[in-house]
Length: 333
Image (cartoon, rainbow, N blue to C red; front, side):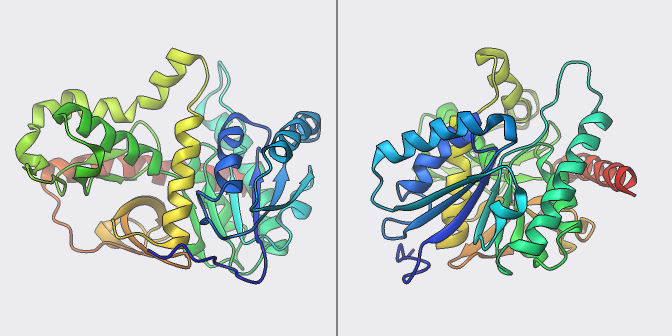
């Protein structure tokens, strides 16, 4: 795939929310250093944070300056969403209200529904009409759905949520289990919600030189170990380091954006608005296997055969998303 600059005559304007947070701390050097948009694309960063975190964000800015990235054209910081999104080409929405002890799911949805309503409206009025958006803050799929609802000027296929982290986790676990290089593993997909109901699917995958994953991994291992491990990996990271995934999440955001904007030969997993494929309700932000091509285009892979085992898992995660979607919209009505 071509690594030529997306904009040869100007920097790409990238807005990052939650810019003083942990994920941003790992992600911003990847953006400024050329890993995301290629080694020739100048980058202007527009960094959004809540007012109380702006002093911390200034420390992050100083570190970015001190890295002396040749591709980093400028940095702008603000606590105003409209200012942050003004003329942005790419919006990376890391910021969200975190789940706290004692919070019910409904409480978390309510807090984030307000945040993503406001950000959707700001994107709608200020961003470039062709802005590409990735939502990372959880519950990412439903937050992206709310954002889409309040940003009608933005083409809905330009609004996505992150499940590349889950795909990376799944590919890595397969490689470790089979003792093969990650580069030899292909076509492991994530279906559904970025939650503990997601379905990591190996039934279309293979290992170069060894054959189909369905012949190498039995269903008992999948049900008892592989699927639960991927579904609960985020919780396992929190239990171990007392903080949520940051380095791996940042790396996955970089992978998502690089492949979406610059293209990839591989099928990748992205949460995107459903077009009705595989019986998923239209408009639901659902993770599918997709083909991506340069310029921020993608298409959902059609015609994959799904056995009853896979259909059962996909139904569970779809039902969860339908419930979240209805609950969020009820809170905003």
